[in-house]
Image (cartoon, rainbow, N blue to C red; front, side):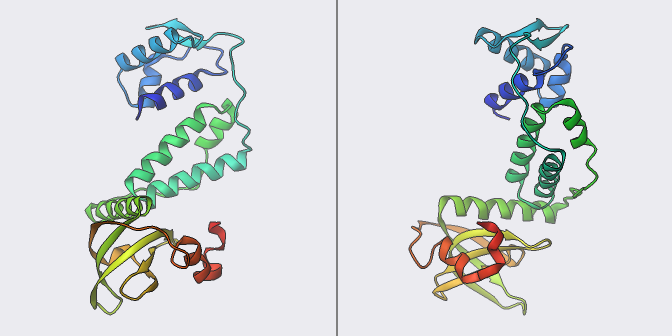
Length: 234
């Protein structure tokens, strides 16, 4: 976790509390050592953040320095929690870690009753990753990074019949269909949009070339070509 994220979470974990929050509890929540918490709190105090307390006693924000809570309804919060669980279970490792970090930030600024509601949510997406699932998560991370950087990919792809072909593609988006992922691309071999299932990509390498999205072969054109399937993405 970045130091800036830790400082954010420390401040918001203290908001609205009537009793001191122990440094040990902060350390467990943030996954860091007690020494790191002590140092971060001291730095925040030196920066003018009105934190009162000391090591071994606990910390509170000075009265009158509170900030308003995020305005989430219970149902909105439940949707965020469930969404985070699905990302952790089915997305790549980087997105999963980012989703968990985001949820920690959200829960840190919630009033106690909503924070308790988030812990009681009974919709789960169990995370179970053997080596095959870990490798697949890494593949999703690789494809996601290529989309963001607009890197041309060379893939060896096995179709449903087991026939393998080599393609050079411009990756445009990833879509999750409740069981399978697809990679939406502009395929240079076919000179058209094609979808590829990441679990059927035998080999994937970055060509070293970057592409510019051009009219007629960019993401907007891709979404138009697939029609209503992606209506909810916009």
